[in-house]
Length: 244
Image 1 (cartoon, rainbow, N blue to C red):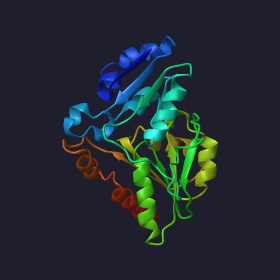
Image 2 (cartoon, helix red, strand yellow):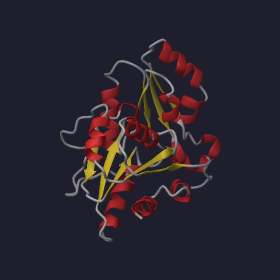
Image 3 (cartoon, rainbow, N blue to C red):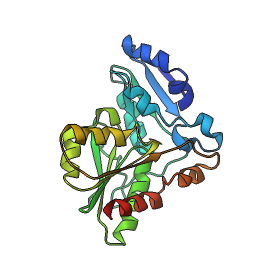
């Protein structure tokens, strides 16, 4: 079955049913719209900022959080051909296309969606930014702003936080400081997954997690995200703080 609804109604409000879907191996495909602070004017009651954490509590659910419209298209096609329970999560606003340095679409051409893959959006040698979902584009903007200050930031994106390729993460980060950013609870999303992976592997890496740290305001998507520091400027500020 395929079901699409606001994030709060398809995950928070029906968590026990989704838990039963996990137990029964129902093979449900759930599409969350209006997730995160990107829900904007609908306010804190409609801010689904915990869906990764909720599905992380189960043992079979997978979560996909695409970076832009092109990856959403490829991820949807992949999801509909895969067995198991899969949640595809997106926000409310229209997203710009994530591009390569030459201006061509990163997720265009012969790009093929792969579960667990980590996308290398920009190279860098001083610090690593790991983004989830629509913050990928903002992370690329931060990379460009930081470059003007002489800071070289590698930008990664992972659309599948629960199945992220840990060995690839370790190889891409190495011993560099790591900043994670997501439109999701800062303690239960991709930042927490990454931090736990490094800790369990006995790897010492400086990590700072940017995300939702309180219920957000009601207003335009851009204003609500800016208030939480989840903008290109906020990501760049987080990198500077991490490098102090």
